[in-house]
Image (tube, rainbow, N blue to C red):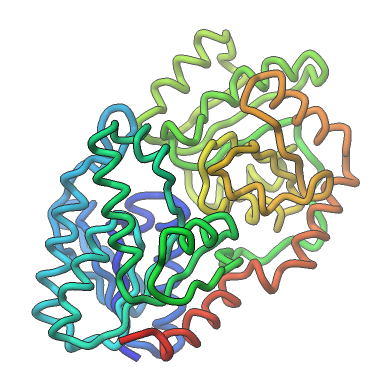
Length: 383
């Protein structure tokens, strides 16, 4: 089957759950014998040539800063990307049986829909998140939020096979009138192999991910400092980078947490895996998550997770309270500190329970399981 994957980012040039999903999807589909093309924006030096095993990487737009200073996505890059996708598919759409795109940043869905008038490929759309009117207004203001909400609804109205990665966003997608069937994929975890038994815990609270407003990475710092009243040896580490990293560093200074909480930026996958495997817990203080892949990655190592309850946080669906982690009621320091102490008090028994939870759910949590569903639905997607 000839498959065109469409996303404006490419791992590891940008890092996030969606980036890893499309990278893994491209590699696995190619390994299974499919002809795969990956459309993206260029995020690397012109002299570099990004390689994805067995996949044709095509850039349809120039290198552009995706985020504005406050940590919000800029409007221009999605428009440029959508125009590039449209132009590519108008010229080359006959070469594809399926165009599989992320819903966000939306204009790629619109471009694929317009070009399908000439080339009868099937459209598959991943909806990692469906935003509410209220969140659109908060994100872009009253006028911009109204436009964003309308574009999201228009994209839902494109005939498609839709994939969601949580019940929360599947319900929201159906509520705005998606034109097509909706399948919930539970698995994005592509390895490494899960541990047979967890490592002993070091007193370290770990975060890994992009430093953006919604992740609230800086919340880790006061949480660790408060929890140290009961766990004196406790430290923290926030891996990753992004627009709000200066805020994280400033919070470390203001909390007098130098040497206690570290923010080393991006590190290799090997170093991250090593640090995560021995961490006391993984802290994800996000207010908004479409899935929460890092929760699954941590569980595969026997490391419990802390997530925060919220209307837009689908990562709570991955937590069995007291088994593979805990849900804090807010991102306030006292609430997060209490959650850290609950994990600490759970001891090695909670680490064993976390790993057992992963093994019980491994089939549904695995990337392979989701890929099987994806390929099965390609043939039935509406043309």
